[in-house]
Image 1 (cartoon, helix red, strand yellow):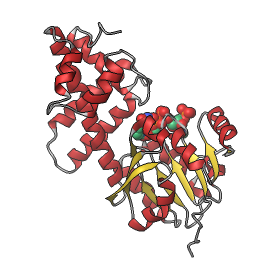
Image 2 (image 1 turned 30 degrees about the vertical axis):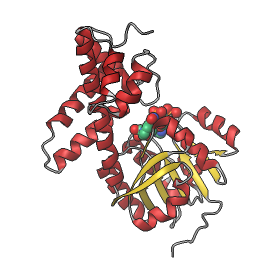
Image 3 (image 1 turned 135 degrees about the vertical axis):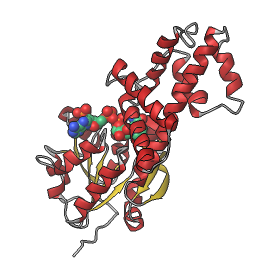
Length: 307
Ligand code: NDP
């Protein structure tokens, strides 16, 4: 029989206290009996000291007796690893518990994980987020959910702690799919805005002037309105979302297009370009640093005169 659990003061575990996982976990920690696990244990110890959460010694220990296990890891491969690997969380989860995966994952692996957990009565929803680190800190993320509608209703009180908007996209994997397509659009905007502004710079047009026009015209995007003025023109390139993760997202989107028989030459090319940029800039570069690759190829610097 499936246990009935109170959402009032839930028992939860959180795995993956990275750039976006940590601020999400801070919201989850409120009015929750929380255990945390992080690969680099000092990060979990520091989080525990700040919030009163328990710093668990393994994913299995963190997951013991919880109602909800939240994961926020780079890819679905790491989610599988912390669930089913050595000292993994899955054997500790009781029937009636739920895994809420905030990773921007891949739909096929999420479906596989959900099926495997279902055998022991554990529910799974993919619940990737958008809104960036600032949205996570503000508790205003958009959460796109794939999974059973009943499971979403059970998870809603937890999701509401860090969400400004919750959207049910469909069955397991559809949250991941929508997230991948959204981020592929981000990647297209970053690369194409960099190409366009590089060309305009070489023509002698001040990129700030060009953005002033674009941002009151039909070519505008979040990238041109916020990212370029705040991160490129002033050359600050803050590290908030790794390029390696955006490369992964575009690859997932291009894969979905292939699997569904959807010709997507633009997504394929964007995926190829971001994979090249990742090889060139490394695993720690921010996604906006892809602009530097475009600039290097063009032999110019966008906003280089504005320091
Ligand atoms: P980070 O790289 O900052 O953090 C990754 C986390 O996963 C860290 O806690 C890291 O531990 C842990 N980790 C990495 N590899 C393993 C492993 N093999 N086993 C166990 N734990 C591991 O990523 P983000 O927090 O930025 O991103 C997490 C997810 O959220 C990704 O899927 C990303 O695409 C998505 N996302 C990120 C956004 C952002 O703005 N940053 C926005 C929206 C979605 P350790 O501390 O040891 O490195």
